[in-house]
Length: 62
Image 1: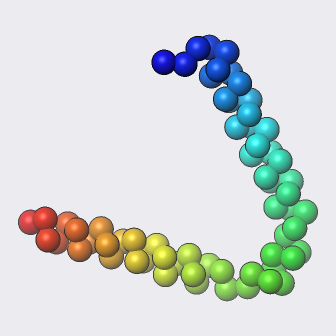
Image 2 (image 1 turned 135 degrees about the vertical axis):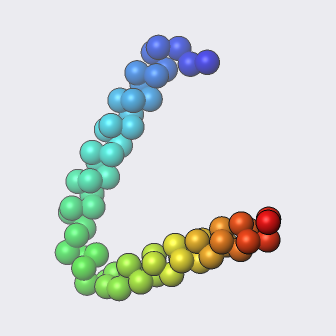
């Protein structure tokens, strides 16, 4: 499906992208602590909502 060169390029691109994102996040970490306090609550509510949708789907499937 993909050539060996494409797979190597994809792996290298992914590795470099992740490293750059880690450096960018660390650079902005102080700002994140100030402006995004309580963000985990939004994430928990979102995950709970998704879990509820799956539960409803399983419940009505039976």
